[in-house]
Figure 1 (tube, rainbow, N blue to C red):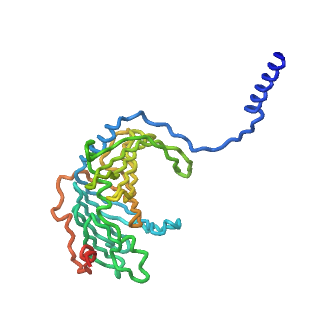
Figure 2 (cartoon, rainbow, N blue to C red):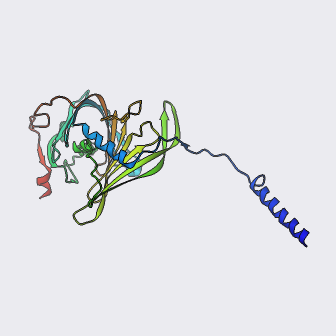
Length: 321
């Protein structure tokens, strides 16, 4: 009986081993390539990097702009506009001036903001010309009256200067306290990486610095989420998500070139792509020979006047009707 029991036990293990080897058919699959990571970085160092961006007090640069209409993104459809050139001036805390021109059309738009209020002058198309005033902290459902056959430009009319100033001039991260909390954790994402004509799926590892604040009602709400790419030299800032007072995602910004070739940090990226879900557009801005912290700026650079006597639209006055 003992010998028979040992034999059955041995046969059972033999069958189990056969199932794990020759009896189990496997197939080769293609997975996203896991990219190697940079050495670990303390949470305090990540917060210090955002604080270091405060050294960028002002910038003046020629820019290339690429505007994409996202209003039909629920159907997987978008519209890309021809690229345009422009001139951008920024100054802390949140002052901005952006002039947009197209080679065949001339001036398309001019806009400015002092951090509290904004002014936008729309020059093209000619039947949608307007001089628009509004407040930065308000959300407006409609900026320019709809005109038959001109709905394709209404997303561009929702472009606001402050949509650019916040991602490029982010505030310093306050220290943790009774009304402010921030934490860092690691996450991974599968992304399609393109190099020349070759594309492949890769897995990137990120540090996510998450900042939350307590509102007047005592409830915690998200404010910012900073993404640092651990797979690139220097672990640069690659993405910034901004949330509104209700905790909804108001903007997503992706950056390129915040780290130099040697991994050292830079005050201004080579480019930024800003997506505004509520306004239904995305804007890519490429900087060309930027001047960092110029010695002086014209006193009226952030002042926009209605020299062309365009139709004035006061969004604050309309919202009170």
